[in-house]
Image (tube, rainbow, N blue to C red; front, side):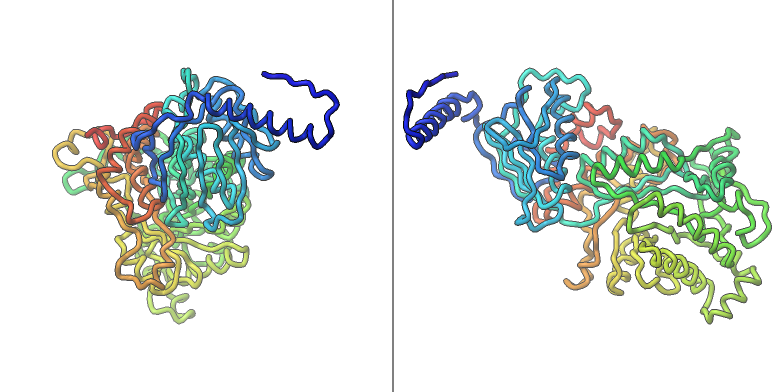
Length: 562
């Protein structure tokens, strides 16, 4: 450091001299910076999902213990997230500060001139990093991009990184679709809060913004409802589980007869919602109705179409049990949904609506009388009536419903969002009726399907499905159907990957089935269609797999090896 003593200069002259000296010092410092003129190559920028615009620059930014993160008011949460990320890599605490940025710092700022709500601009130079976005959500996504410019070793709790540098780059980025989701069924098999959070971390790393939490099913009710304690006391536990791929003509069901179950308390639910919110992920809860209701009816048989007995299902598949369309049932479901709405701030509440067998309604004198009274055409019309009743209640409380594409049967509820899973036809029909749509067709977006195919599939111990959805097939998916007009395409909000867990008894198997297919889907829903290139994506995936390894995720390595 150079010290100068000024002997009584005039104020103006003193200021000019100080400015000159500071400029000289900065020039000397910059010109001698060891990473200023380092050349970078495309191999330094293996980012997934692919950013919209990326310009390679010369130089590298050095992260050291003196590096500060400067943030604007409203970005403290994001600054701390980044500090934790960098602190892992450098083995030292990164200071989070609100003062003005100087050379060698990382600044996070909000910029109202950026049009996209989730867009961001990232500028990395040898002497500083500036990340700007219209919203905190955009800042968070920019941090995920910055994360992938760092070595995978930073993901380890005690990474040994002597010199941590970030290649210079200029990125302008925003997502293609507003809805980028992943689903997890915790009813067929139950996963701990820590495992659910680990799943949410995966979504965050892939810039996904929605977690669809499938909480109720025939095989288990997983959410505490205080007004109806038997839902978890009885409905959360089954007497056993079907063994293997059973239930076919040649393989009748057998059971392990081992009691199985679990549920989340309301405090645990709040914890997960807050954890996801800190990562800018909306949690959409699913409460299945009027079908897939065996667990609820085992707890409260008075809401069924007959007196029972009911039991929490031990096998997989579709069941005849449905809620009765009585006023008592609607009062019960409204009470349940009141508590659900208190726990989940999501505007959308998923009500299922799929695979409703109508046999019990056909045999119910009450249901048949209601069809006649309401002037309904048939049992499909009764299903529509049921869904409309629930929708009206949720709309009154400022929420909207989302359901599987069967809610189209008998007429679509006025404000419903459709999740198209039986192919793309349901999504096309809903968009033509000017309803919002989430595309999730099984052939492309069901991650419980086998991901290998061929003879190798038979040797895969971590997948129980005989259907196949390969990594390349996921990557090839185009969520916006060609059959729609430009005006109709605006109703396609995005796409979602679904994880049904009949044959996923532990979280390791969930990870294996999700990765790397979630990674492929993340690029489908984020990156521009024109930039999609399977070979280049597969090349970048080689580097992403190192991050999976550092984070100790189980994944299908055979899908990645070239």
